[in-house]
Amino acid sequence: MKAKFITIEGIEGAGKSTQLDFIQKYLSDQGQSLTVTREPGGTELGEQIRELLLTPRPQGMAVDTELLLMFAARAEHVEQVINPALERGEWVLSDRFTDATFAYQGGGRGIAQQRITDIAEWTLKGLQPDLTLLFDLPVEVGQQRVLSRNEGIDRFEQEKVDFFQRIKECYLERAKHAPKRIKVIDANQSIADIQAQLASILDRLLVA
Ligand code: TMP
Image (cartoon, rainbow, N blue to C red; front, side, top):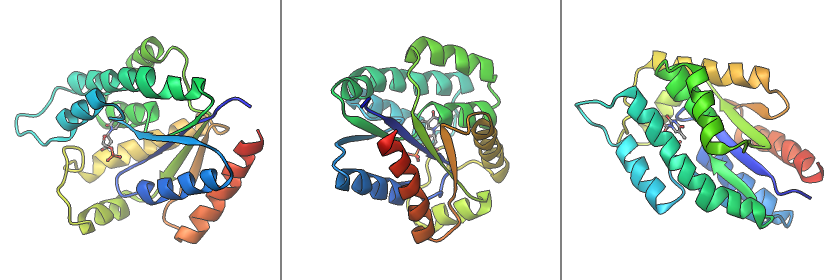
């Protein structure tokens, strides 16, 4: 069976980390070895780029710089981590991937989707997730969860409600056009309900 590439997406506060732990445990209980990683990041250089991207900076960052840094980190991640793992036959679970660029830099920052498609074709050479789990919830609920964490706020979390609203809509639009790959999960349900839904999606992938 071909190794599968799974990605997790959603706006801030969608509960990705809790669900990532569940997915990791669920798959390893089924005997599936797994590389767990994240974007931006996942490599030493990628984590340094993450730091550049997330650190709040009063002077701002050009939107094209942001886009190119995301793909610079991703090129490294694909070459050093994702492709080698898939070639070894190991499944990969990544907390975010290219859908996040379409949603954040495209929907959020207003960069043309075609420009992102062009860079994605150039850097990814056809690599696509087999399954994307999109955790969806009202923007206000996500923002409250971020604030209640009582941790520092990063450069993206500083943005206003309408920025996240555009991101949410862009994610949902992408899901509408790729319903087989992108599964939308209502992140506002109980954790037990979310996990039951995840288990049934993962069971289908395990036999696919
Ligand atoms: P995280 O908080 O889920 O770890 O993600 C870090 C931030 O980076 C989050 O605000 C989303 C943002 N991001 C983009 O804007 N574009 C991308 O391509 C990726 C992977 C993340």
